[in-house]
Every structure is written in C-alpha cells, then in structure tokens.
Image (cartoon, rainbow, N blue to C red):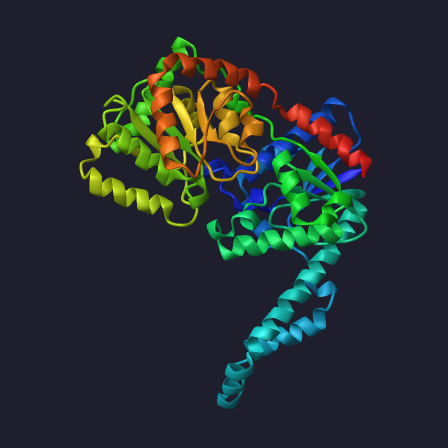
Amino acid sequence: MNIAFEISPLITASGTFGDKSGVYRYMYGLLKGMADHIKKNKLDIKIILFSFNPHFLKTPINPDIYDLIDKKRIILLRKDPPYAQKGGIINKIIKIILRTKPNTLIKIINKIFFIKFFLSQISDQMEFSSYLWILNQEFKKRDVKIIFHSETGFFPVGDYKNIVVMYDLTPINMPELHRMETKDLIKRKLSFSEITGNGIVCISKSTKEDLIKYSPVFKNKKLTVCYPGLDDFFKKNLKDKFNRINNMKSINLILKRYKSFVSYKKYLLYYGTFEPRKNILYIVKAFMDLQKEKQIPDNFKLILIGGEGWGKVKEKIKNFLEEEFPLEERRNILLLEYINDKYLAQFISGAYAVVYPSLYEGFGLPVLESMALGTPVISSNTSSLPEVGGHSVLYVNPWDFFDIKEKMRYIIKNKTFAKELSKDGLVQASQFTWEDTVNKMMRFIKSL
C-alpha cells in the first residue's frame, strides 16, 4: 500500500528561506513523521511526492523537501510530462493558431468573441488532462492506493482512496476577512471533499464541528481529528542560564540593525502572518495605551515577527511606527521580518509572554510552540485555541479591545501568575506529538 502526497504548498512556500505557515508545518511534520514510522516499524510502504501543477516541478525546489527524500521510502515524482500522448494533434493545431499573427479583420473578431482566450483555455485544459492521465499511469506502476490531496491541489485522478486534510473553514465563517481567491479555493476544496473524499482529516475538533455544520454530507464521511505535533526546534530546552545568555546575545545582534535591544523577559511577542484575522492592530494599540498610561514598565517592548499576508496590516503598522517614532532607536515596538526557526525559538523563549488574540484559528501553532518553550501565552477563547491551550493559557475575547488590553496589563503585573502559566504550559504542550498524530493517521488510513 503506497501513498501519494500532493506537495504544492511545500514547493511554493519559501520554507528554509522564508515564513512557514501552519499548513506548511503540518504537511512537513506529517510526512517526516510518517517516514520515521515506516522506517521504525519496517513497513513495506513508499510515499510518492508529486504536484498537480507540473510547472512547479520545473523550478528549483525548496531544500526542505530534499531533507525528506529517502530513495527507499520517500520518492519525488519529478518528470516533464509528454503532453502529446493525449489530444496532442488538436493541441498542436490550437498552438499554431495562437502563434499566428492575425490580419485586421481577425483582430476585430477576436476582440469581440475572445477567440484567443477560449482557445488558450482549451489548450491548457487538454494539457492538464494529459498530465492527469500520466499521473494515473505512474501511480498504477508504483502501486499507489491512497492519495493525500493538498490545500491547493485536489483533483480526481483514478480509482484511489482520496484523503483531504481540512485545516479550517475561516474563509466560510469569516468571508469579510479573506480574499476572493481564498474563498473560491476553499469552496472548491469542500466540493471536492463532498463528492470525492473518502477520508477527511481535521486538525482540530473545532474544524471538524465546522465541517459538519457546513454540510450534512460530512456526517456520513469518515472523519478523524489529528492534531499537529511539535517541530524539533520547539522541544529544546532554551531556559537554562547558559543558553539564556547566548540566546539574548543572538537576539540583540539581530535587533542591532533596528537600532534597538531588549532584556530577558522584558518584551511581549507576536509572531505569525500579518493579516486582519490575526488582530495585530489591537495588540499594538493596547500596548501603546498601557505605556502611555504608565500601566506597564517603560523598559518593556513589543516585538512583532512575520511576513506580510494580505490586507496591508504590516504596512499600516509600519506607517504608524514611522509617525509615532521617527527615531528608530526610541521605538518600543519593533517590527521584524521572518526569522528562521532557530532564532524564532530564541525570541519566544526570551519573551515575557506571547500575545496571540486571533479571531479564528484551525489550530494555532504559536500557542503550542510558546507553551513548549515555557513562555506564558495570552490567546483567544474562540475556535480551536482552547483545545490547544487547555487550562494553561490566559484567554481573551478577541473582539473586545479592552479585554486584550487588561489581560496584557494583568500578566505583566503578576509575575507569580505568569510563572504558573509557564509551568502548566510545558505539561499541556507535551500532549501534542507527531508520533501520536502519525499513529492515529496510519490507523485511519487502514480503516478506509
């Protein structure tokens, strides 16, 4: 029983050289965990990595993928598809027509009837159909029985068991906070899952509940909840005195380019994508108010780390900082770009608390990662986040600005309470492992 994995999100994400989304971390962690499970248990299973977009495979691939590849167990299916095998002659004729320079009359007709556009669409569809046919032949040859479809790649190929991982239904539940393309993508993914999905993996109970509410069809589907586990970088002990000193040196070397520095446990931290759903503007405004009102120490800072998503949230914060703090060295709010896992873990470990008042999450990895490093967390009481934080997080109503502000003030003023959260968080985080996730996933696969 071999398994094919659609890995477009791993190919298109920057990975080693950029921000790693929750989707990226889940897919990568699952693949690595399954490879380890197969090796440990000496199972006769191979994992075939592929993409539904052949053009992705023609570009340099994220180096993280090569860390996964093991010729005995994980194979990257990377071939230039011979499109001519199916509908080749017709497609060649269409391409000749598209390359032909038309006369004036044909140009006028084309502008009215969009002939070139439709011919181009037909050509692309024929090429894609040919590619699906080739994939099907490859899967048969390699004895594939299961296909894991991705967040962006989901198409019926042949007679296989189709598994879909459902991360969240945020674009459905909060359409005003998402781009049109994102909403369209999730609707198509849900439609595919309803019609073709044999098994649906939800990354939280909250997502599973949302899925069943969305359509009664899913009540009759095979569903399971498989939480993300912790990446290795977030398991290491960064709290002892020796590591703490070295970590702060590394952090301040990075902050030197921003003409600033921080002290151990003297800053609050947010990290993740910058987009409206993450509620970052409330964090910035609450922190500014608390300092202006002398509710928190003057030497406390707020550090925001992550890449720009959509909605121009980062741009708004940048403009705000330039207006309020024209001299960079006097800024108590620091806006950083993406930082790789090694340094990100150091920033988390050195923070007094991580603030994550997201409006909606499918899981909420920053909450889990922060608890695992012994850092107290302020998080929302909505969606999946209480599943992650349990009784080890200080919860807020993300829609209530004054609640966020008050909880930020409270946790800074109450060091004993913050230390209790830190201890409880370590215990709570230990419950989420890739080993448990993979064991449950393998049982689910066998049940299909």
